[in-house]
Image (cartoon, rainbow, N blue to C red):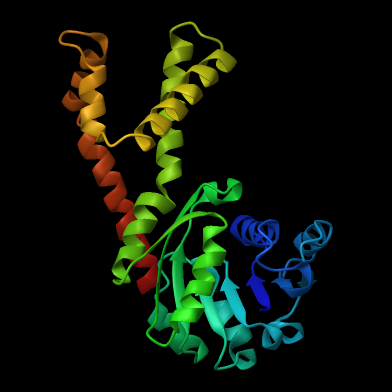
Length: 267
């Protein structure tokens, strides 16, 4: 199976490296289409397949085409490759908000898979939700899921609307975690710790809490109860969060991300 990744940015590069590292494909079957000459030169040095500058050189040779460009660039991309696509090719899009119907109509293709990965895919700890058009066969879907699994965990959803929701939760989610971490780092510094000490305290706390959560059947609420003691320090912090509506703000932020994902799709 020959794979063409259109876009050599963070996720495009992550996919190429993950597929090769897992031996699910070979350098001979890996192609990357990158329009930036400078970035193309950088990719060529990484020895991850053949790098191309135009669709005419490579698109018709691919069995699976991964669309890994910014959603704002989708119309220009569709215009540049429409005349090169073949009916039997499978298209996997990771463009936030861009609907399967939009891709299918813009390119005149029927086999479209839409996925939403996140940045931890770079270290094999990603979370990807994906769905597909009816024309994608079960064999093709399994083939793509095996590729996506090289970057972490995956979940297939029947309703395409869930991809926008996944964009708001797991796609953007790492930034929410880092935002909270940075706030705690700044709090630790204000309490007298150095920056490196603050990073260690916060980083290890997050890692330990997540590992503990993943290794048991307790819910987040149950773990909170285990940490809290009546009249204690944790209870004081959580009371402050509740007074300042932090819980509601987090939900509102995720909803704002969902609304933006829908806007990108409609745009």
